[in-house]
Length: 284
Image (cartoon, rainbow, N blue to C red; front, side):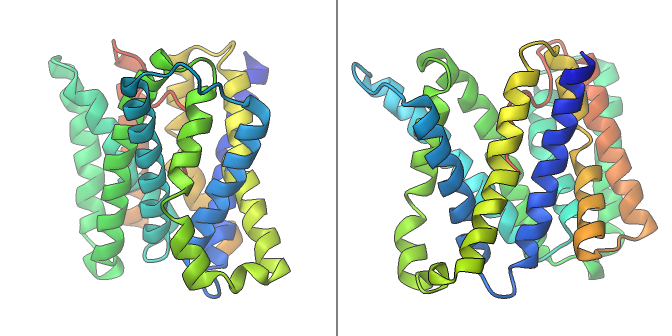
């Protein structure tokens, strides 16, 4: 158990450090290009590792995995657009409203109103200093949260139709394809810069390959409820990583908002009958 918890924490730290390093490149590389490099890295690793079987698939199988891939791509693209406009810790906090809402919509218990109230308090606190937040960045974070909720729903359906990691590997390819023509046409020259390419690939390893690997190993022995509670630490981890790597400072109200959402996610996960708020590898 202790080893599994350690692996999840390593995965969380890796995701958020990768995001912070990615944002540090936004001055010379567009967020879309960084997202593409991240998705490309994870796609190549997954395809080489999993070697998914595509024969004998029904039309329904393909509909589900394509939807899964599109939600994965939209989620990553939207949150990186948000990172470019607002602090990373706040963006990740707002994004968590998506899976939290999904978890609470399936509940009919009065006590779950406590978690709704905590999450709402967090959102209100973030809105108390609107001058500090770009509304477009907030909108992208909300879009990422909605895509995350769709990702969670479609991941379960994909897992039921595709064996092992086959579905995730194919979905990763689906996620990267729509961005490829735009990135190559608009920013292909940037990809010739060895330093940018190396950092972009490193972000892919930090943000996708390492956390996916850690979490998949951890979930073999770690109860999903414990995993979900650990994942609630992501907004706080994002804020710390952004502070250390980028020097992003948050106000006392913003820190309080993050704490409210972390508590809401952890509480909803701990008391959920239907499983954790989030039981898939982290997208951020």
